[in-house]
Length: 409
Image: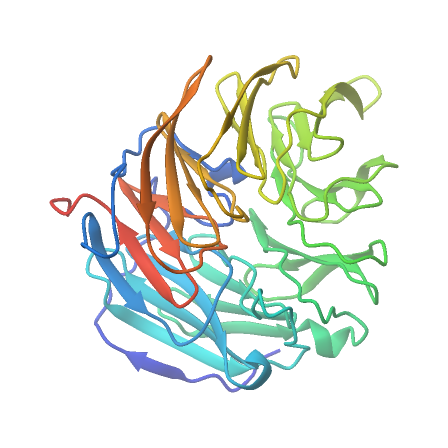
């Protein structure tokens, strides 16, 4: 299915490359881990003075999602106009901040959402060759790296009872040659897998009829087909990423905002604080390993670094031991405001953005955490940062920012 979408602008002659080690291709980055072990962005930056702000770009509308990085392009979405029906996908040069190309269409589905949110709520995703932009209105657009439309699906037109007037914000997930979307609401709730290249609907499974804003999480293990973890307030399902076949089902709910994290043979869920389940190769089921209600991820998703698991709720950073769930310590962030975006960890520093645009940079150790800097962007940030090289790319309410040492290339 296609629609008439025209490239609004082509500002530069581009050379396009496939994904590389510096790519940040989806919500929470590689493996949905929110972690880059070698990246060292500056710990101090400031919008007013321009300190370590390499560039900032005004965009054609609002967004509460994050940006992604594909090669030398930073991709973000926006929505504007009456009821935020006009939706955009914009590519910006990671080096110069120049707008490379931009697409826009009129949403076919329900664009209505809470004033705090936006139609451009999900973070886009990429397989390194295509970009998949998903919106609260359930419009799903696939573009190549030149900004040309590859395919388009109006899921709201195909499944007319799928919609939520509060707004949808589950981000798409790419696993190998499948893009997965989670459309959960009080109406027609479902999860679906579509072929990356053609947009063909490969599978569709019913989901609980309940509003849910968590995103599907990848689970890739050696010797097993790639899997995706779907969570809701009612259940947890693990399905085959290509076929949608159910592999594991847990008859218990998890957070409807925070997303799961799967690594090795474990799945972490925001359930009663944090709960970890371990894969049992004999029964081919998930066995409960530990639960700790003092490790609470709140609106953001959990992060693991080495043997540490990190969660933030209400301005309180909690660090536990991933092996047994024991609490190591808690640290209160000063005057933090609300933290909706999932922080990122770069080497040994955590970057946590509040909804006011304040960023706390925290040195996280095994025994204590120290706030080493408090930085200000001065505009609402609800989307999670992207990391590429030694730079952070931040999507604020109406702008895209590159945070990097001013002497960096």
